[in-house]
Length: 476
Image (cartoon, rainbow, N blue to C red; front, side, top):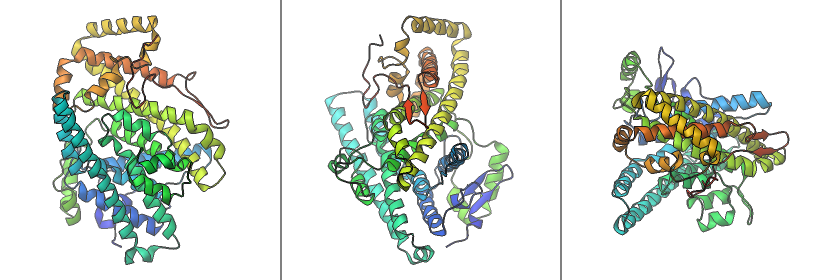
């Protein structure tokens, strides 16, 4: 295997660029074979996204790195706080690395752009048929990419160089590959769903083998994954497989929420560009990347918040529905212990995402308050406070006109259109920020959000009317 030292750029300001497994933060404890498999996955991802830049500057793989750092931090925090071993696994790291290969593959992105254009023309039989056709293409492409990634990983694991690294791990690594691609399949299903909330709702539910066999949930790869995981007829999927995808979805949201300010200043950019020019491999990977940030519309941050609360709502449903079972199966076997560790990780990640969302709300209140003027902002706040005092339930349910309903409307809007909406709907956007703040208060209310791992007790706030549909509730 290649030496990693010449494939990682370490800067004076602490940033690293290059191979994930060669970076200082990368978690320890992996075997040489596991590191090789993770590195191979990283190579696939880097080549698919070669030359692509992130909105806040830097290469596309910064998101993967961000997620891996958060994953490592939460794993350590859980181990320290609860005295259990939450050891990073190749399954999780490979899932983190490859999820964007599927979600933002150039072919998928081109089709999603086409779909957004159709949707922007409004409803109608012709548009509905065209939309359904493009969605079917996205589905076929996504499923094909998942299958190819699986074959590539299996092929690599059979190569002579890789086999030399094995030490009786053949079965474990094959299982890790199947599990990873099943989780990636789940994490990227929203690309073909009409609405983001639909895929998140089903991602946060446990499904039966029969549902997977019929293709009713997940993609066709799930049928194979369930066989590899030894799922029995009539039973629900393994709890660790389920809990891992909920945990990783939360990490994805945390990483994306933190990516709202420029990643590098001018001096940082100059040092990075000088550094990778001196190494042929780094130059090949990052030569076309833009390290300076683009302007982010405030409504894009609102879109991030909308998705955060959709995920938080469904994570709360998952904890309330399955937390007790996972807690009381702890100690039964290795898989049950892994599920319990993931459950602790979900709670830690849930709290972190709530804190990040609170910071975003505070920032947006300042931005929109300044734009509309403090007098108008205070009038809107006073009016909403009066509404809440008269009918508090309207701020915890789908009404058809609140921030979740509006979020679903602009969730698929192209960035250019977001800028236009940002300028034309400032008062409505400020109302949404305040509405999300009231929603945040309910997610933080200790009386309505009770978690007791010792008793296996989970009772958490959820948004009334939000399932795989947005169903307006009277709120009375």
